[in-house]
Length: 324
Image 1: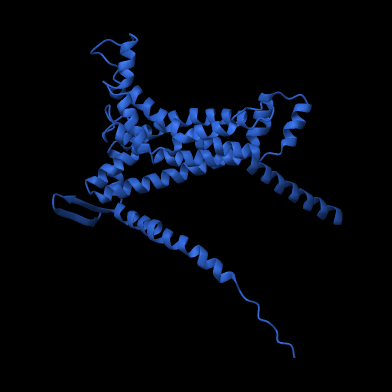
Image 2: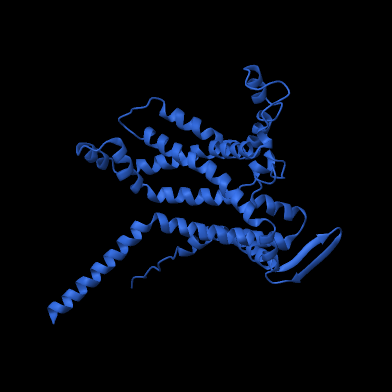
């Protein structure tokens, strides 16, 4: 009799390989998330060396957070993100379309890709310190402007003392740090489009603008959605650049104070209840905004699926009518 070989089950190895991710996610993300949610419902802070709480106060921390100029800091965060994101996505789309256009035949394209990506490798803290030094009242920028006669001695341009100057510098830094990464992603998306579509469009007489808006943009929509959502989440978590540039106080008049900077202030003062409430507020806000963006950008796809379902129903109804 021939012995039947037992089939070896290798599925357990898959669970072994993915176990480290789930263990790290449980320890470093899921458990802290539940702990943060719990702290947000408690009065829990340090008063000198005395610990107050934890005392259950329900939604008291959330009400206190909304009264602590929360809407103003939310608006600050969105303004700083939008000022940096709009030029970032426009320049990235322009560069990606140029670098992937085979007819332009740009020389040294790989070198340009490396150069535009280099700012992404610089730490945000180092970037902020560089700009703080460059644009201070006695920095190189004001010295250069004085030499060419734009400003007079003793009257420098106070970039860091005006709302426009501070927000503009923060937006400029965010743009310089991230537009290279966005360009590389969009180039990969455009390179994934079938080149025969572009050739057919040119044969039909379409110009570059029509090809870009009618073919390129619709086909790279998933990457655009990903870019927008990740950029928005990163914007809500903006901290290091405005923190260093304004020394953590959001000058002038807290117009550059972001939500994470406010959260950091509560953590430094060891007010864990208020910090937990702000964290949950950010979590909910991020989820709602991501859902809205996803629905807005994928409206056509959703409508197409609904139309296909309606067609199937109509076909079934007509078949039943023919059978009757």
